[in-house]
Length: 447
Image 1: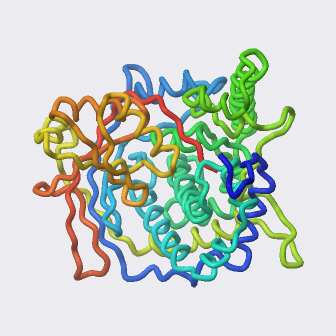
Image 2 (image 1 turned 60 degrees about the vertical axis):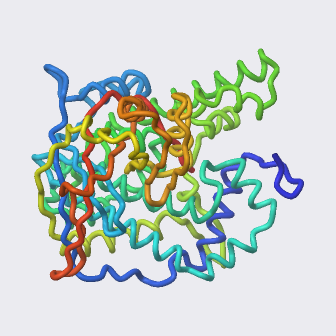
């Protein structure tokens, strides 16, 4: 594949510079207005841990398969999974600990994500700069990133910021922060967003987030900020090194032994390299990966890095929303899988934790491997339309998607699941079936 005659090339620093050049004049059209206070309803279900363990089956399975050399005692798990509908009418799932800050953090983080998405989309000057990109810039983004289009890359980065905040909230008891607002400010002041960008690898952060687990221990500093423990830093580095080595092993075998080209190797070993990161497979030997948003550049006569801009705006919005948002738990049957699949003609469902093109490929691949045609799959609304043959076929497809690490939900128009409202007088209801804990084993990669 070429772009105007130019072959896509893998170059993380060049890709980072393209994104920084687009963002540096201004990523957001204007400071987003949080609007009136939100009223959001959610459902909650306790995670089912294995006997004599603090982990669920899926968490343990993922730990053993993809987190070497991390041990179970180094992992903190959520106690509950929640489901709700956000202000854009999109179903979501998240996690919290009953002894922590509760569901407010993931809900407020999602609302902040939506506002920044809208601000990026409304930035016409940014759209003009993207339109002016040449084939060389597009070639380096295509060759380096999972989400090739700049707006999609920015959206995924914003969403990852919210994921990091909600996931670290599982560790609130290890910090001096006792409210959702304090936690957001404390995480910002402690530099934990930069720690995620520089120490984690993307699959680990996205996949452990979906499973409600985090392999981190926090230590409080004398000034009230928190940091990763030395053991956490060493373990995260070891997991990243293991992932890189596994990726290189696949590529060495394909290129040196099977004599495949790099493109053919990636095509042949698509599944293996999705699990252990195509990006890491293409890293030159001895090179350590860096988050594209965290790389510094000299632009406009000064030093510029995209990550602090996104983090500052995100936390400012999140703290304002968390301080005014009102959430209420509603009861529903989260285990009514047979009810989800009661009608064979119901072809529509949602995957709330589908958030990049890798996820789209994974879910499409699961369905097509079962002979189920995919009519439509929309990353923004998380909506999937598929050609199920029967209620049993639909139920089995949901199980297979859950085995891949995702939590599909079916719209339930006649049974209250979640309520989204902005302002004290407005209450808009949308109903969705909630997810339940199942075996999960997939991973996800982004930029």
